[in-house]
Structures are given as structure tokens and as C-alpha cells.
Length: 253
Image: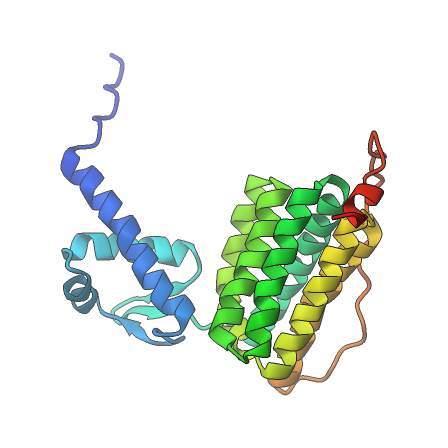
């Protein structure tokens, strides 16, 4: 006798899942903005009252946040905003550097003039925030810049992994923002876009890799670890030449 197919979700279940997603976004925003700090305990009842929902969606949101690496559940103690050890953060920086190098190389091969202009506008937003010493605005502009690059690269799997790693690194990246570092980051982003606009695959990949590894080094120093020597970006895999030269068109953008 064949098994019965699973019953379709009820309206109540769909409503609960939808609410859980909204609750997850709301709690995640509090964590990423720093309203909820690493180590803070998340209270199911308090968040349910604050957000105007029942405890069910909050409980489901906790589960999704744990999968995203932003909270941890301790038996008989509750749910806490996750604290990322600096050693783990340094490993994440290394993985991100490799991913960013790939994204830079790909964009140098594929971007059209209009898309390069989008990246330049994003850098200009960062530069304005850096000049104003506005760390929150710079942080948002920086996230938007890297998210735009991911979108333009067009790899959904890479984007999903990258965004998860970015969220886990949020605490450390915020700590690295000073008037001096924001100016440096803005210049590095400008160089990245320049290499992409020129169609220079190796320079774009190297600029992206160096940018992330420089952030890693700042994190090491901030946490009292000994500086490391410069890292070398991995060589790019051979790629087919474009059907028509693109660099001249980019330089006219």
C-alpha cells in the first residue's frame, strides 16, 4: 500500500512561517546594527511582546538565526547572540578573500559600461560617508557595494555563502571602522572599480583579495596578535578571451 502524500500546509502554518521570516529579519537587523551585542541573551517572551507576535514565530526565527550562524542555543540556558572567536573570524576573512578575488576577475571580464557606472556611484556614496566620518552610513554603503558586486557576478550559490560569512563577520568589521580606515577602504574600492573598468582581470582579482586580507590584518592587530607577512592572491584559471575588446569602451565610461 502506497504512502499518502504529505498534507499541504494549512493557512495557520503558512501564516506562522511568514511571521517567522519577518521576525527573523527584525532580530537579525538588531544584531547587525549592534542593538543586540555578542553574548546577549534573547528572550522569547520579550521579543514576542515587542514585535506583537506569538512565541511560535519567535521560536522558529531563533532556529533560522542559528542556521545562519548568528545565534547559539545552550541547553537549559536559552538563546544567545553568537560570539565569533577571533581565530574563526580570521579564517572567514581568508575564505572571503578567495571568493572576492574570483568575483573581481569575473566582473573584469563581463561588466558593461552601465554596470561599471553603478559600482562607481556606490563608491562615491562610501567616499561621502568616509569624509563625513559617518561609520554607520559607511558600513551600509560598504555592504551595498559588495552586494552589488555579487549581484553583477550572477552566481546564486556563491552569493548565499558569501552573505552568510559577511553576517558572521559583522561584529569585527564594525570594530575596524575608524576615520582613517574608512578613507583607506574607500580608496581600495576605487582601485577595485578602476581595475574592473579597465578589464584587467589579474589586477581586479588581486585588488579584491588584498582588500579583504588588509581587513584581516587590521583585525589581527586590533586583537593583539602578531602581524603576518603579505599574502599572495591565487592565480586565476585560464579564461577564454572576450569576443571583442571591452577595455576601450570601459575607459570611456
